[in-house]
Image 1 (cartoon, rainbow, N blue to C red):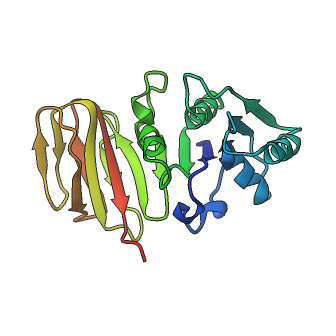
Image 2 (image 1 turned 120 degrees about the vertical axis):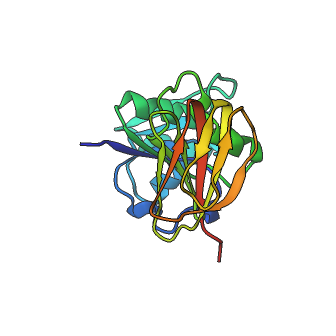
Length: 216
């Protein structure tokens, strides 16, 4: 049986998917994400971070709320981001599905850091097991072991972007096929599904993909 853990980071609420708190699985709060979960009445396995986004009263309230669960405070100067600490904990718990919410729409450096988490040398094997979701987009990751994208209900647009070193990447049966023999940092956007599945081929590396809908 697959184990799913959801992580809520501290990104803007207006970027959350509408059904966020109806999602199955256990929860982890990263920084202000832990405070948001407390406000919604959830009991996260862990609230973790430097909590620099909370004032002292909010931090004490969250610490008290987490008294019977895990609450970990780190200094602002550290090797991992708050979200990476949450991902590390989820992996330690044995999660094979990690869904990250609240990770987009705020500071761009935070968003880019979140999108590149699968490149972190301490988190091997995330493609096929890690997704970032907001109100318009689902981001997933492909590698030589995970070469199929399944269309999500209501999602029409599909994009691909090689991350780091990628060899011989091919989009096989989307509306716009592609053969890319060498690494490219380009985002190949506005592709479309022809059927319910899109197959790709990758000899080496990680490719980020997006499934998106127009807003409004």
